[in-house]
Length: 496
Ligand SMILES: NC(=O)C1=CN([C@@H]2O[C@H](COP(=O)(O)OP(=O)(O)OC[C@H]3O[C@@H](n4cnc5c(N)ncnc54)[C@H](OP(=O)(O)O)[C@@H]3O)[C@@H](O)[C@H]2O)C=CC1
Ligand SMILES: O=C(O)[C@H](O)COP(=O)(O)O
Image 1: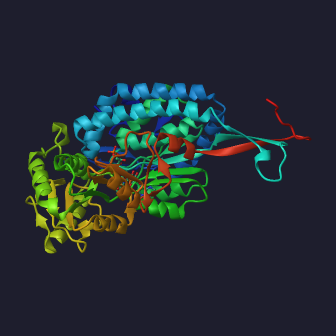
Image 2 (image 1 turned 135 degrees about the vertical axis):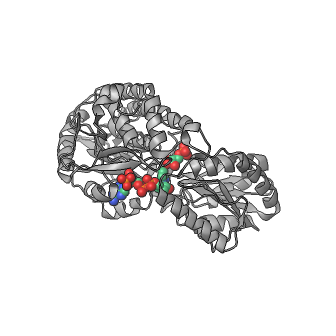
């Protein structure tokens, strides 16, 4: 049960505490924010609504803690991260249970998210030791007009305080994908978890607490993003923001100061299917890519662009697989579970109604019960329908029939998003040309889009983001380069 056993100290009655200065605390606001279970649509948990003064205090402490942490040997930082990773994995069951209740992620996938997060933290420790253990040494005589009189020693140093804001769909994993790189690089970390997912995050933070990280190095401020978000993102103490989420990220990037930003935002990942594709492979990938976690993944397949000549055959195969998807509560490990909120379900329904009005072919009957929406494949979608462009973040997948590959690429590139895309063909040369032509951060050849493995570079073009994630890139992003130049009175050349 949430908040019991080793996690008992993180609750106060029925409200979970926030984490600051190495302690679990009640907010002076006396207010709480409710977390609604998407399945029961009843209040499941409550978290503290932190105040601006509490944010100020956390920033002050984080600044001091960071200075001491930056002086902690790299191998010791790595050791603590390994310890936290092990504790996190040890508690995969209770944390997984929170994910089931807060975000209706299927039970098995919830546990997988926690294990994947532990692995990610360990990988950060290992990668950080290698990456940050090296700097560069430059000599001046390679630049015209210079003798060998200057030696430059460049190394990577921390940024200071990293503010991490993950979204609801992978609250634990997308939190640690920011926490791990930030800490190994010598930064302190302030986490603002998503409201749906906050309790899972608080449990995860407690695993770092149990590992014995110094006081104040990690903090977790809870509250509604719409209330506390601007104060956090515009706080002068913040030296870097790593955000994953929707359009909110665009607004944050306009408001944030002159600090490094890592933004992973929405997507409309296209799946381009050529005439020679293995249609069974495509169909399984469309099911996995379009419908896992009910389509609530930034990397979900969000539009299928299939050559007209194979469209009927593909749609039949996908329909047959959709019919086999288990729909129901996350506790039963259903394939399709309730979407995160009623407003999300209403938004999805709006896209479905628009497509219906404009003449899309419904491959299944549209069905909804509360936040639970049955999987729906919409065929013969045209560009004038909203579903052709907008991300439903739900189990509804549009199919657009195309007359040429160019038409598919054109649709993909006309999107304001550019996260990932995929292409299915047996012709690798064609696949590479299409990959080059697609304006997305990643193109998968013969598989559905995916972020993992978590050390791969992961980035969005256009409105899908700023910068690149993946463990290595995140560690680099959360550092800056410092140079020390040794100036010699006379040129010095080594003879060998
Ligand atoms: N590219 C990627 O890697 C990914 C992108 N996404 C995208 O995220 C969206 C769904 O996730 P969702 O959680 O709904 O996204 P949101 O953008 O609504 O929320 C993301 C986070 O931002 C917080 N937030 C809200 N308002 C503010 C604010 N003014 N200032 C600072 N933080 C704020 C939220 O807190 P609170 O919950 O309290 O409102 C939450 O923690 C989809 O568009 C999806 O494509 C999702 C996952 C991965
Ligand atoms: O938030 C998301 O949707 C994830 O970044 C997707 O991760 P996945 O591709 O590993 O599911």
